[in-house]
Structure formats: structure tokens, C-alpha cells
Length: 303
Image 1 (cartoon, rainbow, N blue to C red):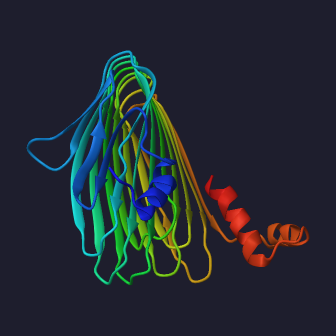
Image 2 (tube, helix red, strand yellow):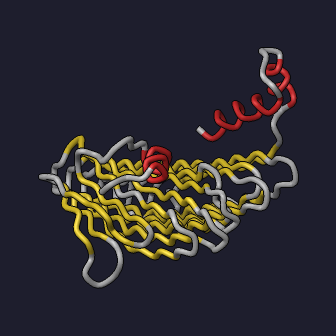
């Protein structure tokens, strides 16, 4: 694959890639798979019945990563993709996903991506997904990711879900089911500005004894966050939603917990506020402008 300057910049932003990765990967661009490679322990192959790929990580695979970024560089593209990711028993791997849209024209460009992820017994996965929009055109940049996660006994998953900037509209749908002893941590970061909108729906079901989950959702400006956690067994969970509202932004945060077992332990908290004046003043005394001070505070908040 010959990368254009736009391709390279998008890959750096959404996947921290400065060139084609040495391990397993799949790069999708403008609705088509354009380059892929499997490794000795990770198979990446196209589906035969629908757009998308199967990623199969062999049992016991350690310290490997697979990159599956999506690029859209044309105006008027609508891309729908269904990926299945299977993490073998006892494996320990990182999956780097995400989508970058560069819209140079007046038509809407949109990516709807579904990831079905199965993490088998005793496996560990770190999942990193970044979304980003840019482009000199007036066309909308729309991203609608859906993640369906199934965690088997004693598996561990860490998910980092980030919307960096430039996405006009997004609806994020995350579903997870945890078996006995499974542990899930989700950190979600959403940044919008102007008239951009983001909606995040999560449903975490703690089905197995001793399963546990923690959800931390941080958002800035015009967002709607609705994480729901349901405990169906002796399990532990915590949901935390923190938001900063700026200018004329609107934020709605509705964390919910539901216990369907007498030994379940669930907690939640939510906070919405403005940037504290004393924080701005402290940074401005160090020589930063008000805009620079705001940027520093927001970067820290969204980390």
C-alpha cells in the first residue's frame, strides 16, 4: 500500500502508526480493504458473507498486537463493516482499532463499524479505539461504532475508547457480558465542540460469580452519556461519569445500576461542571493565554 500524506497523518492520529506495522494488521480505506497481513499467531482474513474481517488470536499468544484502522478520505462515502475478533485462551494481546475521516467535500462521509469480540477463558486483551475527523470540506463526518463483547471465565479486558475531535455526530453502542471471574475496565473520552453531538450507550451485564467492571466516562461540551450496569450474580461494579460543559454546550449524564442478586455490590457517581477559574488563573500566571490554559486543563481531564 502506498500511503498518501493524508493517510499517514490519519494513521498517526488514530493508531500511533508512523508506517505499516511489522505484525498482524488490516487497513481499510474508503470502504475497501486495501492491505492486510497475518502473523504466526494472529490470523487476519476477510469475511466471505459481508464486509469486514475475522481476527483470530491463537491460544497462548503473548505480547503481540494487531492493528485494524479504518480511513475515509473521500466525500460522500458510507462504509459499513462487521469485524469479529477472537482472543484465544490464555492469550495476552493488544488490539488497536479506530477510524479517521478526512472529508474534503460537501457530502457526508460516514463509518458504521461493528466489532464482535470474544475473549476466551483466562485471556487478557487491551483494546484501543480512537476516532477523529478533519477536512477542509463542509460535509459531515459521522462515526457510529458498536462493540459487542463476550468475556469468558477469568478473562481480563481493558478498553480505551476515545473521540479526539472533529466528529460531527456519533452514536456509540457498547455491550458486554462477563462470565465468572471476568474483569472489565472501560475508560471513555468524548470531546465535541460547536454543534457536534455525541451519544454513548453502554450496557454491562455481570453474569458470573466474582465478575467485576469499572466504567469511567469523561466528556466535554455537547454529549449524552448513558452507561448501565446490571449485576446478575455476586459481582462488583462501579460507574463514574465526569463532564465539563463549555460555552453553550449541553450535557446529559445518566449512569444507572441494577442488582439482580442479593450479594451484588454496585456504585455510581456523576458530575457536571465548568473549568474552575482558579485553575485557569494559576496557569495564566505561568505565562499561558486563556486558550492555552483551557487546552492544558482539557487534555489533563480527558487522559
